[in-house]
Amino acid sequence: MIKKRKKNPYTTVYASGQRICMSAHKARRVIDQIRGRSYEETLMILELMPYRTCYPIFKLVYSAATNASHNMEFNEARLIISKAEVNEGTTVKKLKPRARGRSFLIKKPTCHITIVLKDISLYEEYR
Image: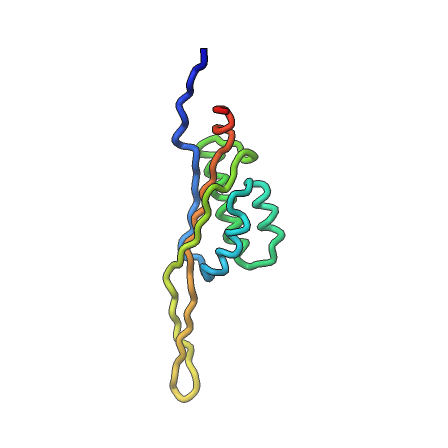
């Protein structure tokens, strides 16, 4: 007799970072490299990439894995990045004083990053 187990609906864990001071275009360049990879492989990739955007993304991935191990008691070796998205945030505008009493506008873009981790060990039990 084959027993059917109910699938656990709580197999994903996420972490999001709001108003990170970087361009969304530059963050997407790094996010596209890590989407769909395992957690441990992602950490190695982010440590070795030469971009400034890697550090905040590294912190978010690490935070999502900590949420998974602490709140849901998942094994960090069995996590994969199922979804990673970057959205544009607000633009911080500053005025820079120039000659003859004029001022120029300085625009500093921000972005919102969301990392979703999925536990693959729950899917391997049902095969």
